[in-house]
Image 1: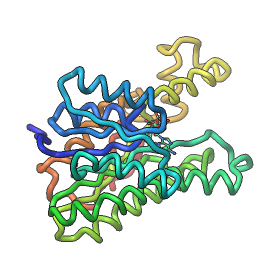
Image 2: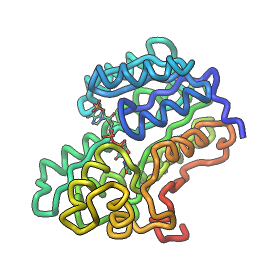
Image 3: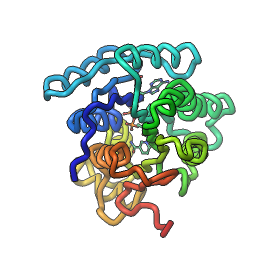
Image 4: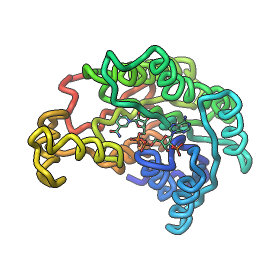
Length: 266
Ligand SMILES: NC(=O)c1ccc[n+]([C@@H]2O[C@H](COP(=O)([O-])OP(=O)(O)OC[C@H]3O[C@@H](n4cnc5c(N)ncnc54)[C@H](OP(=O)(O)O)[C@@H]3O)[C@@H](O)[C@H]2O)c1
């Protein structure tokens, strides 16, 4: 399958690290011009440079998406060289908090970062996609939307909101040539995941090295059919498919990439 994206311009929010960086690199390898986004200039430049070094095209847009002004600045920078055809709403964060420690302020802030930030970018960029009768909005959701844990409830709920708004957007975009879909990762190995698991591993008797800790952590926290964490590139592959013309008939759908962590048929 050739997921040809030449001639398309894509903004991947939060592409200075983790899943976003992997998504940006794969879309660039498939021919799209990428706008790398984040708040940290050094990290953003590093990813953009890596894409250019591999023969791809990348520019950058810096900004905090939690304010209207910050999001407007990002949208302006992203469209400086032409309209955006593909928006991947990926930027997000969580703190590992219990119900007792997740304050109302933490709930509001997490909702603003993980949900409203994406809405801001949709409102800035989707109208021009509609005018051109082609566009792709891919929202990164997560298994915790469907199967929440008892911890970090403020984060679980934001993932559920992302899934919900992406389907509502698909209905809104009926007949426009612009699609909205969700990629729902399980537990994917990024820096923060590895740090967290390695931190708690020894005390829980999972071992001392990553090789010892991983299978035990997977069994205890995220039992799945492959016995490992996912890789950022595996999320990127699903996003690339949804951005391609192969996925024209896919609307308001969720692609789970979680090794079978979610034990549901639907
Ligand atoms: N990793 C997983 O297992 C997993 C599973 C399910 C869903 N997800 C979702 O996937 C997305 C990416 O996760 P990740 O694990 O790759 O996280 P990550 O490595 O921490 O990267 C997060 C990205 O979001 C950006 N970001 C965070 N807050 C921002 C803000 N206020 N304004 C603008 N940019 C902001 C960060 O950029 P700067 O720090 O440079 O600003 C960074 O590029 C998140 O939305 C997360 O909820 C992850």
